[in-house]
Image 1 (cartoon, rainbow, N blue to C red):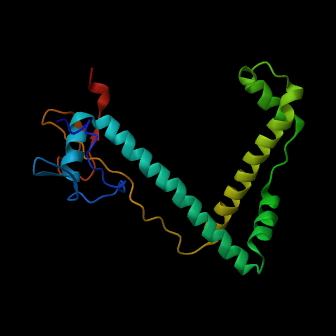
Image 2 (cartoon, rainbow, N blue to C red; image 1 turned 90 degrees about the vertical axis):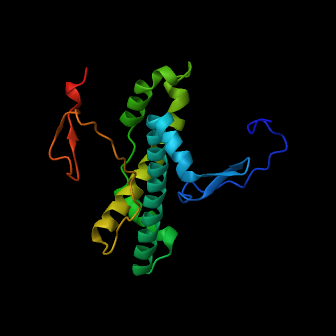
Image 3 (spheres, rainbow, N blue to C red; image 1 turned 120 degrees about the horizontal axis):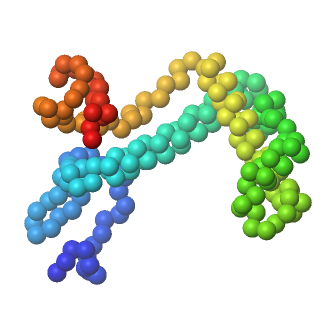
Length: 191
């Protein structure tokens, strides 16, 4: 019986992508397969895809972490200003909000005309203005967070980015001693 097509196979609940390397991720015929074995096999079979997925997970976590940190900074600033959060956020983003001009709407339409599916500028100027308004609102909030981050003390990101160890053969071109913490590899020599 194949483990992949078993209708009666029991599946575990979804696990975090950060299971420890010694976590058992499968059992088959009495043998336990660990996360380390799985990752090692994935690395050997498709290192580029594993690297891409690892980077994608990190980037998404980092984006959400940045939003969470920004929310905390805004909440603290609202408290310090003795204002309700919505009022503070509206007041501070309004200061940073760039107005949307008719020229902005026209330029957006002209740049994306091929996606208009036959609709005219007149039909799309309202939705375009609303879309640009949402973008500008997000930009104003991002600027507020940036301004608050510059003023804040104790803001640190401790999320580790993905790291990869790249094995070099004895004959691979590189600069620096073999035991250097960082080795620069010149790929221009490869044909």
